[in-house]
Length: 100
Image (cartoon, rainbow, N blue to C red; front, side, top):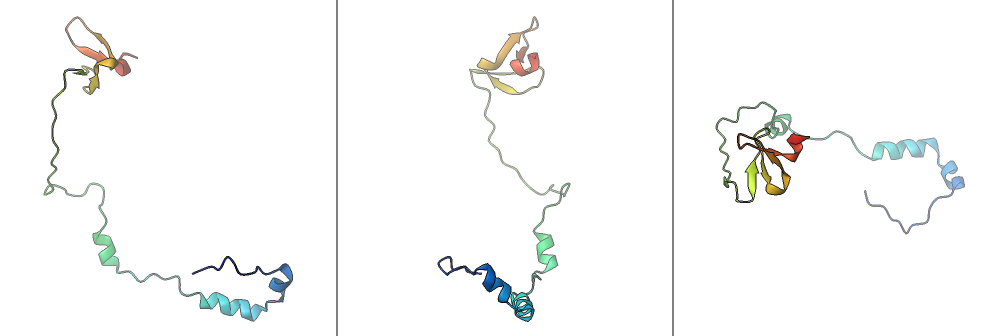
């Protein structure tokens, strides 16, 4: 519904003069709140958690660890060398997050 912001506003006296019948007719003229939507079409577009995605294919390029990166031996995430906390006696790297 378009609103004309340049139109003069009603004062409190003008609002009080509106009859109850006029207000009721305005309320019914607004229209129905019902939405015409096919439930079957709406249900087909929803993805439910735990849905069978076995026929779906995911293509992601795998990039090997770079020279300035390491894999943490605790969380197994690849981090930048700036997050290296220490290398233990066995040569395993640990990140600063897992060191805390």
